[in-house]
Image 1 (cartoon, rainbow, N blue to C red):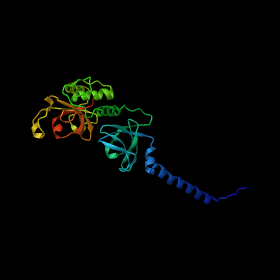
Image 2: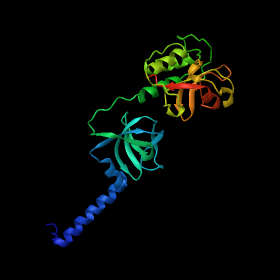
Image 3: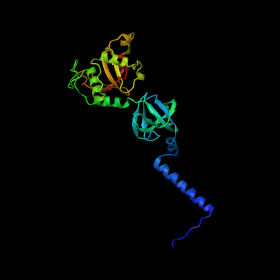
Image 4: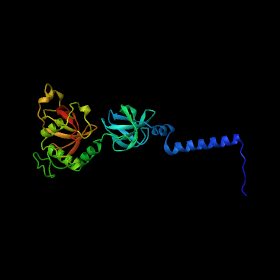
Length: 265
């Protein structure tokens, strides 16, 4: 026969306390801090919106791996909070942590089974990926809209949206600008631009701000279009000398020429 152990009430309480402590310690190693676990277990999910571009990380720390980029204006679900961080879920279903400084709570909340407004994030990334395939494609003014051998600015944008989102935009930049305006998405403040927005420009007059002083941009004709990538970057094509389709800086001359921008999705 095996040995029989008899425990007093006191020894049994100590044994149970030790087991609970071991479980808590092991849990902290396997799943993160107690605060993080508690944050993830909230029953009410708060809606939120990014007030700036922000990295979503694998843990509530700047040392966490960046798992996705959340852009200004993107809507998210706030699953919990811990020490200045929100655990969030994007419209694509990815989860991670973002600094609460860059996520603004909305007034409404929902549970996990609630429906969300469909986001254009996935379509934006498909359009950008489609455009990136043509990096280095030579520039040609008035290029054939049915060909991918060469592009001018509006032909390139049109091709990126056709390949990436199945959307056939108008053939020239002015009509594309009107297309964005008709959707009610146009903004004239550069800081309000979002990744994937089309951005429209007037004619080049020089690199200095003084060259554009006193100009009523509302009356200026669109002469160029590009895709805004965020982080002060443009995806576009504008001359043979520049090397064709490229990712370039949204530099001073472009900012001086900027008229408006907005989503075509």
